[in-house]
Length: 353
Image (tube, rainbow, N blue to C red):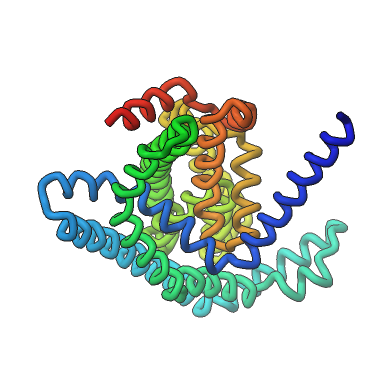
């Protein structure tokens, strides 16, 4: 018995390693599919409502048009915000370098060695390269978005047919698990994105208002960057806090001002992310903070910026499907907060229709 359990556990471990390796090696195949499914979950309610009053193809055209407008608007704003920041770094490079050198001298004078790797790499050129890399990654991956768009169009056309196939499966238990999991996942992802968008908007407005209040330059840009990066838990708010802090140091010429800006920006992020958001989201979206952090790091390692953005929704989908079957329910209960009573009833109603 013990040998059989060890063998079974080894099989699961090997399968998991192979699956992770496949996701990493074939990221150009799997990442667009995952992103397309994510977008379909968000767009389908609009498509379904339009289909009820308009021809199917016309409804699809309108849905795709809305999605394209949103994407182009975000792309333009990203290029505008990070482009302005990049130009500001170039124009003020001498002051950045001066404050960096002063910081190195102060730290080394207090016994903190900064020579070597830090002094050679963490400088103004590094900051400029970082800003350019972020902008480039988000705006030059046209092939990725084209593939995603094709998958989204085909997926929206197949949603109804796929639902009928699931309802028509002979194995009713499997049908209920798949249909219930899909419906619950789409609902949770939409709720997650709605909450995340509102919290990002609040964060962006507060950062903009704070920057305006203290006279920090590029206030609008910092507000939008805070709004955008807040979609990436933990890492996004950290980046959105560090960059304005460094700019405050060069603009105000004071370490005290830099510390004050850093503290206030962190207070905004903490208040919105740790106090307001949990109360707005409710228990339905509660995921272990460790699981959220793991999701961000794990999927960003596999798929880069896109993985960091979509990592938490993927985890929500995984835990939601785990909640549909008794053998995997323990995973959902351990790392999430499954709605195990409502979902089967909803799936059963869909199966009867």
